[in-house]
Picture 1 (tube, rainbow, N blue to C red):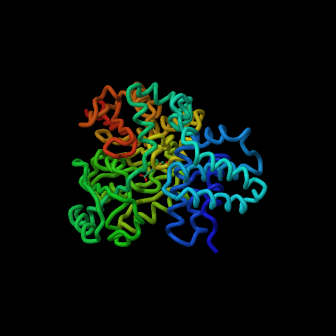
Picture 2: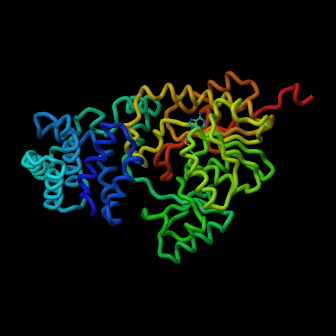
Picture 3: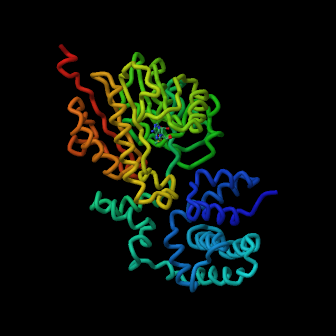
Length: 438
Ligand SMILES: C[S@@+](CC[C@H](N)C(=O)[O-])C[C@H]1O[C@@H](n2cnc3c(N)ncnc32)[C@H](O)[C@@H]1O
């Protein structure tokens, strides 16, 4: 039997915020307990919404309750957020939102709290001023943790508010047409025939198609045939910037789930590509994607920062380092990231990124290209990494891309720019040293 959507939403949000699990881990398990697609979509919308507005939902509760529910009652505190989110941000009729939430409280063993929950929700319904946060602390006004707001403010004194606002938006569904199988124009025609609205708004990304409305991708034309992949437009720049030819030996050192690996091979199917990732479990998705799209790579589970354990001794012509990062650039797509990521996570991540970069640089042939990429917008993980690296490696030169100047040490895309995710790219060229040229 299908379970109660609000109960699942409250439990899922509790698992993320209090237990530190990611929504992409928790949500599919909760959705599997629901019978129909509408309920699954409703569950997702509520969980994403609670993540997006958590500080304001907490602040409203604080105004209406003497203290938050604690210990074994914590899931019921999240149920209150679920109820308030529906009343404030969704088009569910108020009476249904309230009665369904109170019913869910019973299922969460909150029989004795149904009066309280009903009372809080009725107050929210009656008092719109509870959501007046003009004079509230930044964290509540902007629905982000204070440490992150401070960092973004320092890095982007003129754009930080715009970035925070972009993080509150729903991310669009971008597709990348597999040009190995059919042209983007032919795929666009197939979408039109299927009555699916789309646009192709980015001139220098020919295979990028933005759907006007999100939908189940498995029901789009050509899913099983491998005609397209789901990939944000910002991530679609990687394969082009890497400039791979069919005769190149390529390393994709942090490859899972394989979005960029597959794009590289779509553009250069005969390139000899080694796809590496430290997490064997994540490599299953790489194999699946390669299979669905009809592509081939040498897939290895190994640590990119320790090449002695896996490198076969032949230099690579091209290296993609899509390094592990804070993912602060993709908060609109993964709204829970802002609560899962802690300030203390950033320094160890930067240390790992620099280690991977320094080690993989040794594997690049003179004249070769290394593309450093993150889905972060924090300068510590991006431009500052490249500055440090360039200081320490005289055989490296930062290539100026059409999109940026070398002064910025790379190309920083901010979330929401052309409706894309936040992303960073730096293209490094390996200069042939004198001893190699003579
Ligand atoms: C940003 S994701 C890569 C996304 C991928 N390039 C794509 O486009 O689908 C970063 C990946 O780095 C992997 N990773 C983390 N530390 C690593 C290491 N030391 N060596 C290799 N891979 C690592 C993670 O498991 C994760 O899959």
